[in-house]
Image (cartoon, rainbow, N blue to C red; front, side, top):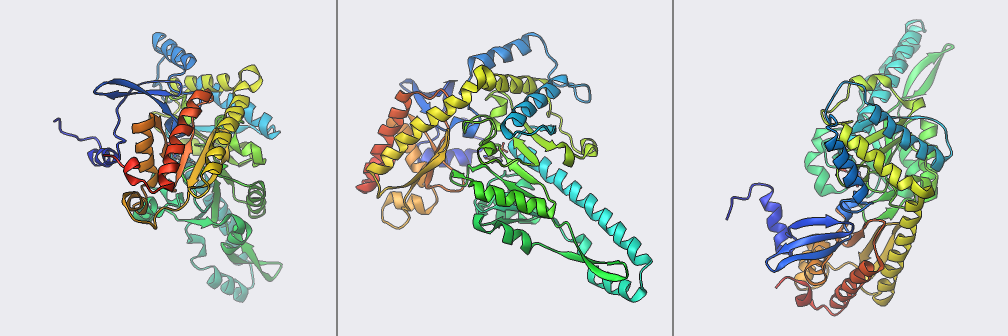
Amino acid sequence: MALELAEAHLRGLLAQVGLDAEYVRGEGDTLWWRTPSGDVPVVDFVGGYGSLVLGHNHPALVERARELLDQRVPVHAQFSYHPYANDLAAALNRVLWREFGTDEPYSAIFANTGAEAVEVALKHAEMDRVGKLARLRAEIDEHLASADPELAARARAHNEGRFDLPPVFLTLEGSFHGKLAGSVQLTHNAGYRLPFRGLAAQARFVPPAEVTKAVEAERVTVLDVVDGELVERDLPVVAAFFVEPVQGEGGIRVLEADVAAEIRAAADAAGFPVVVDEVQSGVGRTGAFYAASHVGLLGDYIVLAKAIGGGLAKSSVLLVRRSRYLPEFELLHSSTFAKDAFSCHIGAKVVELLEADGGAAYRRAAERGEALAAALRAVRDEFPTVVADVRGRGLMLGLEFHDRTGGEGGVAEYARMGLLGYVLAGYLLREHHVRVFPTASATHTLRFEPSIEISDEHIDQLVTGLRAVCAALRDQDDSALLPG
Ligand code: PMP
């Protein structure tokens, strides 16, 4: 056998539960699985972890890609004028203005992946914070230079070291914002985060019910002397609040409107930006282009990735509202591949397809999402001792199983290793030709993120598989679920 060098360890783990399938063709919601007896169609509910809102190889996107290649469009022409990037940014703005009822322009910084765009947001927010800190420090220094020496000395003693405090990033419990050195600090899952906690500034993970309290807990003040009196001034310690409109990897958890409003109000009161991470939930999946529009949460920064590449390109973008945008940032952050012509043109086509016919695609996402949710709820109602919950919005849905870690047998053993969802995924693939995965940080929850074209037949195929899973779990029939 050939030497395995591309993440062979991972493949070994996938093989244990029968998930090391090779897919050789993809179209819409169907993948073809290469097996010794021929290529087998599999219904794909993973949807590229959210990148395939229009399905695999959407014909209009493939045609656009062909055109670009046929026309010899220069894909890499860095440090030149990129009208196509501007066109995509303008298209994203038009949708944003409509969905949020605003007219403030948002500037776009392009990147390549979700985590990278999150890091762009981290850097931009920190640059903003450091600038504010420097201005405050200069102002206080000036005041102290002409103040009563005793008061000035007291202020200096109090302020000692405070201007050098590291930034704090706030985010909700269960959040997932990526796995790079900075973004992984905002990813709640301890397994992903803790080995790398020494690499970058830390986040605080806030329970949704305690947003205001958590912001207050971070309050740090310095002393100034104004009109001959010592006064407290707030130090900008919190750099940003990151939030997903629907938590994806945390188990498909929809942000409640009251929590969204509390985050917005706390940020406005303290002066830090809200970063809305729409990497997984954005670009049409929830029945609107921007998932945060359902709860009226207008971010100061908005992160898009995954589906903006149409399943063909790798791209991401950070949108920053004009009133908070730092143009100097453009000279400090760049990437060889970002803002390339291919991904910008594909991104513009994705927006065009979603916006066509007065937003028919969003209505379709909502309608298909409701059909899928109703089917999942029926499974829950049939197996209440097995299924704990069905939740989500549009075509971003999750089905959570009751805890299985307590019992005996092989399935419980996998559950204790955090692999319940993967074992069930292996079974569904093998026996029902349905591809699902658990969310990354909540492995008792299966996620469903098919394209807006998902058919009733495909939903039925999933439900047949899920009912068999639930019956086997209910009857503790491990041999039915585990690979032979
Ligand atoms: N943010 C969110 C909300 C995500 O779901 C993900 C990926 N699952 C990321 C960021 C990271 O994106 P990428 O995998 O493209 O780095």
